[in-house]
Amino acid sequence: MSLQHSIPQAMFPVNHLGSTKSTERLQNPYEYPSVPLCSANDVQLRFLCPDDLEEVRTLCQDWFPIDYPLSWYVDITSSTRFYALAAIYNFSIIGLIVAEIKSYSKLNKEDRGILPESMGRDAEIGYILSLGVHRKYRQNGIGSLLLDSLINHLTTAERHKVKAIFLHVLTTNRTAILFYERRGFVLHSFLPYYYSIRGKCKDGFTYVSYINGGHSPWILVLADSNCRWSLPLDLRPGTDGLSLGVLPHRRTVPSAAGRMNRLGASRRADSQFPLLQIGS
Picture 1: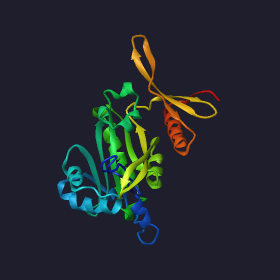
Picture 2: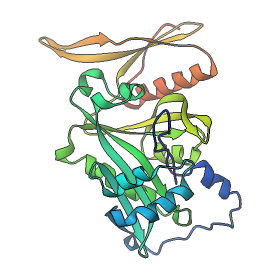
Picture 3: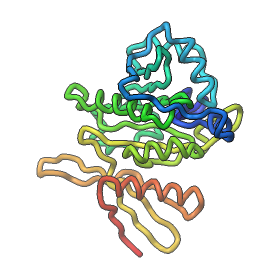
Picture 4: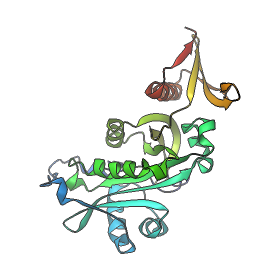
């Protein structure tokens, strides 16, 4: 499993279940056969520590399509800023998840539309930087075990301000996309040229799962024969109840990128609320 973030556009993490590098090596199904575990109880979870740095670095270089700087490995194995959890089997790391909690106000511009503006003011969001599993031990539920641990951590009473969990993934990483969709994550946006991998620009997706009462912005879609106008709506509390505000609109044209954008808007709305449509 593997893939996420970027280097220039999104800095480092670009990991999530099934990177391009892994896919290429799996062309021969007999080269890396999956090894079934005797029992899920054979796997232990623990947080990363500084002594794990070299082992984690070796795994990530094998799993993921970009080369992380040494400082990134130092951070995830020593800083309490990260939720960095490892799956251990026979005294070796066979999987890991790295995430952090971000304040909504500190999100990058392309990620601000995950929550309604009124909800986002005081909200926090979980961001999955990396999720990977050793190819020998895939199809054993290790990725789900790691993801469940993160979700359980973020849905406690102390973390009630965390309203969503999101991640970035390459558009070509079908393994990761299918995994997250099965786990209830929904497509939020299409990010053209989001990644820079070995000097080449790659497109990405943002996927989101809402927790602790969080939800996507309402979307009003105005359609005509040539294009659709997507207007995110924001419900704001007022003295007489909820008032409706319209955020800056976006025009969606019927191009390939436009269809992708339209798909993201429709799925984002349908996942939580009915899509409001005006026009033919």
